Image 1 (cartoon, helix red, strand yellow):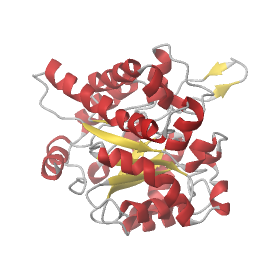
Image 2 (image 1 turned 135 degrees about the horizontal axis):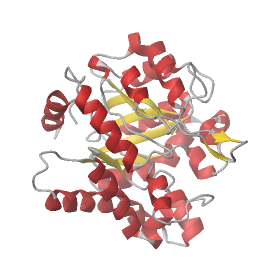
Image 3 (image 1 turned 45 degrees about the vertical axis):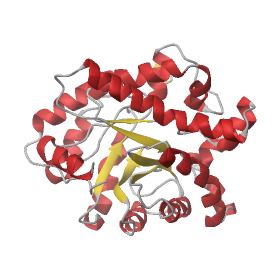
Length: 325
């Protein structure tokens, strides 16, 4: 798969990621907000809704879709769904199966499409399990050891790897300590590749206050990472973050960037203000920096279709390819 992925990047420019899976599921009528399992509950209660959401993103042009496992954990499934440990493990693995089945269906339905799509296994931070917003502060990491964080994450990564995910997406990681724990843990799965994406507080620092430059340097140490970057942040801070660390990006490493839509709450209008999502990538990701890009919260299949049209049409030189996976 590695050579095929590398050739795709050379021939077609950036890999287009999907957008907000929960955003699409809510558009389909599912209730996500406030649920301690987030969209992972639907693996148990409505797997067809997840298939439908994946399919919408594939139709929009996504080259990579992420599993509905960001807030999934063995402990969470046991606590909130009253499953056995084995049942919880099987449910988590089903997230990969649903995504792969959807890719196969899409390929079957679209024989003229000369492209393939990868499945990224979503692994959120420990703070996502806490369900208190701490994935945007990383405060919990101060009270945890690297080994404790590895013990927490090991079952999720083991399930995703066992289910045959194409690569692992460590995403919305708020702290250096948790990033180090994940990269140490990744070594236990030598056949797995991953990207590492941070939540950030501003245009200079990740959420725990450490410089984004430090995060990139840590990522460069891993031979299993294919990309490092940011997600679930305002598009406005993407450019300064990448600029701050551009000189540190390893020769075999790509950026991965998938911010939120950029909408903000308008108190006067009592609603979300609009934001033109796509031009952010036109300004930031050019020439060799064209890399895996997509969206996070409130980024819909329509956004992804627009992003693909603009980026593919404006790509005038090959992207920096992902390291073979």
